[in-house]
Image (tube, rainbow, N blue to C red; front, side, top):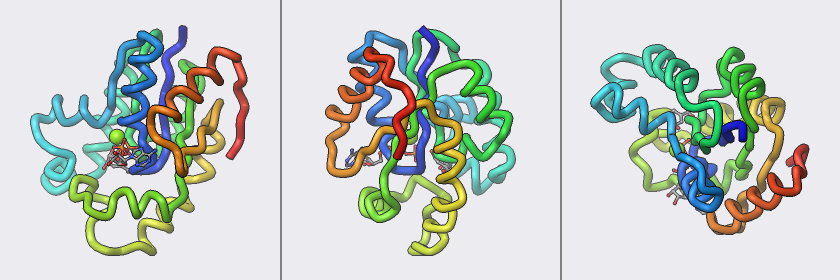
Length: 173
Ligand SMILES: Nc1ncnc2c1ncn2[C@@H]1O[C@H](COP(=O)(O)OP(=O)(O)OP(=O)(O)O)[C@@H](O)[C@H]1O
Ligand SMILES: O=C(O)C1=C[C@@H](O)[C@@H](O)[C@H](O)C1
Ligand SMILES: [Mg+2]
């Protein structure tokens, strides 16, 4: 089958849910953020600090293009959809699943997190404006939208699997 690209804002649960979904469906699992860290040999924070976001985005797009286009579940980074070329690539080559969580839920999930450079500092307005700017891009790129609020990762993975099996594409949220 075509690979599954999981998209959504930071903290939506892409890394967590994609791993479970891959296990449940017997597919390979990849995470663009992990691949970037491995390729660069340093953390995302350090890439942003030492090389800048533009270099990070270039690596992210390169990695997206070389990951398997079949039989894999791929967790993407929260900003992958900012590039139109990446959006077109994912739509053309795979099934795109948008994990939706409200900004309140995201800020709650990530309140202790120090690994996401774009959310460092206690600037909720900045996070909310990035979220609002990206929301239409997640929506327009998605084949399936999965609501994550109030659900455990296992339940979300299982909902997605059933949706895919029933070919119930086209959910909105
Ligand atoms: N459904 C959920 N309910 C509550 N917490 C969750 C849920 N899914 C994930 N989390 C928690 O939220 C945090 C972020 O999850 P995860 O790393 O999977 O997000 P992500 O979408 O991959 O983020 P990023 O875009 O930054 O890579 C983790 O601490 C994880 O345990
Ligand atoms: O939303 C974003 O722009 C990001 C999300 C993370 O997955 C990482 O890719 C990085 O922290 C940037
Ligand atoms: Mg992740």
